[in-house]
Length: 143
Image (cartoon, rainbow, N blue to C red):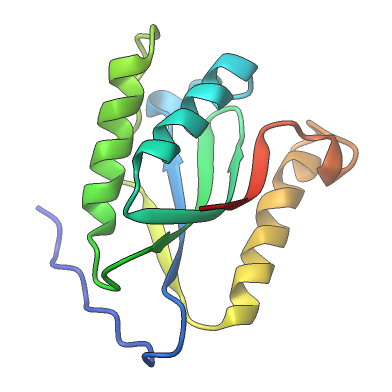
């Protein structure tokens, strides 16, 4: 059982943005391909209570910047549950996501840029791309 989520205690004028990482069960390398990336995108589009300022898929995990659109206290765990459910309903694959995910509430606007830089450099650090712009499984500015 997970502990209850702490309510968002940011000032009312500060955006609520989470840095989220979800991993593939057993860290299988199944996400760095066009069909998986297209399915990730179409599933994120279904989550109409959230905006996704950025996303990047690595072979065995997915990074998201996620922001609730309506309610600052929107449940991140519920969003992840629906993402995983809808993804697998539409997926022909047998692999699964790990239970839960890692998330961090970003407390400063600068930290959004820092996390996006971290996300974009991930394929370069893993020797999957020579430049962040070479990695095809990423986007910015969604909803």
